[in-house]
Length: 430
Ligand SMILES: Cc1ncc(COP(=O)(O)O)c(C=O)c1O
Image 1 (tube, rainbow, N blue to C red):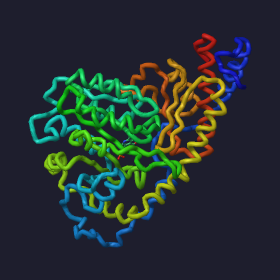
Image 2: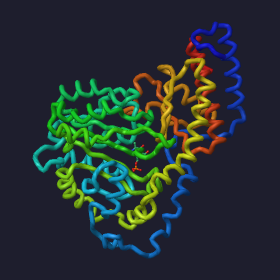
Image 3: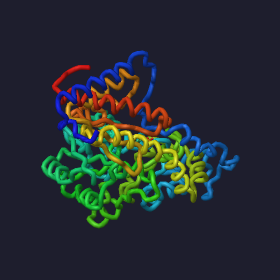
Image 4: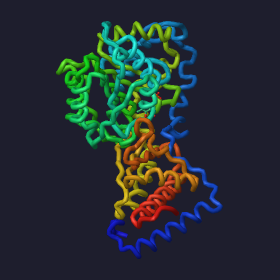
């Protein structure tokens, strides 16, 4: 088959659709497969790479800097863990907070601070605006949307391009609406597109706080996949800090990262990076939130990852790369010629973003679900669960075993072919 579906003669396409339909019906009759491509989490083999975290301290809880990690205190984290965060985020260690087990909870803390206390030790607070809003590049990360919604922050979609968010649109909106208070970014191997922001986009992001009509605009820079390259030659993310320092906006950036997908998911270390000015304010509010982070876990991480982060991430890549390749090969062989879908081919991260023809994502996901394949719910990659074109499907290849992936992709591509053929032929149902 080397013809676009739209060019196939009706009678021929009817025959193809009938054969896909009978294959699908066979699949669901007596079907008891349970497959899942919705879980953006590490596979057990990836977690096992960090098994030696357990017991690594051998009873020595004192940091090289002399801190007893078993006790309260050090709200910004131990210096050695702050240095680890600095390495991950490409910033100086004195701008880093090494926190607890999750960057998501740090994001919650940061949004709360932005709403109620502000970052600058003055009267600026997002809650001063009756309808504060955030810009959300789409498709994006569902938990950013849930967080924003939980704080009553309205979200405005910004389209993603392969180089990053549409910055012209972002600047137009922010310049004309003082209630727009910030923008969410996953700048490297974005969830779910896998795109990495270009230098132009990073430069444009650095001037956005100046262009914004509000004086308390903040770039929320969630660099969750900073070191998650699938190949040695991964994408290079230009440095936002440098770009901001050039134009004087560094007090309007909060960066996040964590080791959740480096060591243990929910058992790692989360980080924030901000300017020294903002850190002083943040520290005050952080000490209301927590007496000290889990410093024992921080010390374990320092011992485990110190000097071997690259090697450790290469071991992850060796497990994850074949899974991405398997998914992409199946998409190419089953769908490329038919031209019924587009997808991203990321060089790292945890996701592949698949766009089917507009109006078909929900149907594909439902059909796949009936055949035993769970996919991320339609619309989940958009604020309020609403994909305006109903076309985006997020594929998470990491957790499944390779054989399961093959089966899952067979079901997914079959469903896409069937639903696309039905739409092309003007039919409604299987
Ligand atoms: C973009 C992004 N940020 C944050 C997280 C969660 O991070 P953590 O485990 O540090 O809370 C994820 C997890 O999937 C993610 O994809």
